[in-house]
Length: 196
Image 1 (tube, one colour):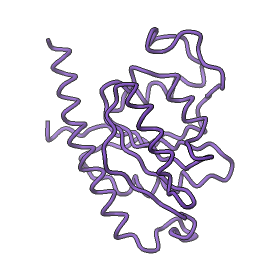
Image 2 (cartoon, one colour):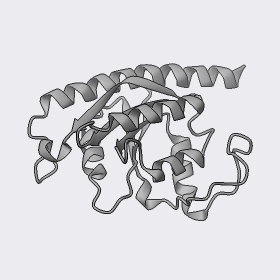
Image 3 (cartoon, one colour):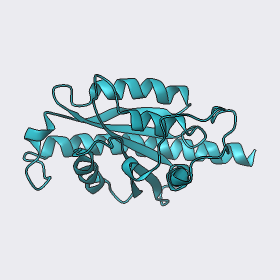
């Protein structure tokens, strides 16, 4: 198991024009070591309708989805773990992210999830706390450690590089260590369940 690279999807949760999410996601992707194979998923590239399907995905996991969502669904299903990059919007997380979550179910089931937040004063922590509750309902395991960028616009330079990276890089390593431990355990548990 230790030699196997785990598939990590980094999800950019904001689709707002002028968003800072891609900068944060790209920085985090650079922190990921060779224990993981990285796929950066930008929700701005997926069709995410506000209307939800008539039957919950928990009841019908293979329901028809919009054609523009098929790539997102396949990439989420292929991932062993996720890191959600999110800002705070009105003390919570973006609607597009909620839509992506709610259109899926089995893709999240028994997988591990980490968070990288950015915002004004809270650094995305308000969004992260809400997301923990949502993913818990989907039988996903959210790891304790996270990375937070309060007043992100002061922390990154015009080239998208952190002005003082050391502390944030240490937070990213701690998050990735926890994510790797839990992902390895959950991959093994899912494989054992299938074999049984």
